[in-house]
Length: 134
Image 1: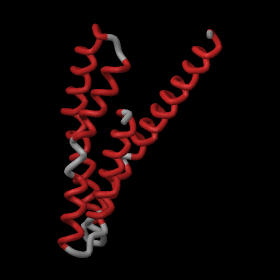
Image 2 (image 1 turned 90 degrees about the horizontal axis):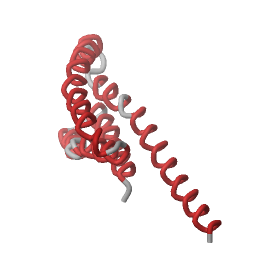
Image 3 (image 1 turned 90 degrees about the vertical axis):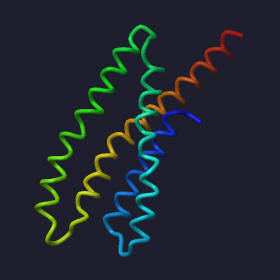
């Protein structure tokens, strides 16, 4: 299975779990959302895997360092966004921050979909090139 497909599945799980938690009407429904969310840490692994396949061996150390920096800094920014959203919506819909979290997955899912289609196109192009040289 292609790394981008695995990544899209992971981000789709994060997306769905956010909505499950936001609109849960029972503890069981909330727990199901959390079980789906348990697979989201694999997104970091998939992004690293895709990245190491896109850069040369000499640049993989830099890429991993950059990934580590972003993995450490991004939660800092999101904490303040989540706090702001939660404070503004706690009185009428406290699950809004789950929806905000789900919506942040959309750009990544689009990017992973584009990478998948690009890779598929490149493979087809290589096959056509090989057939034309025979």
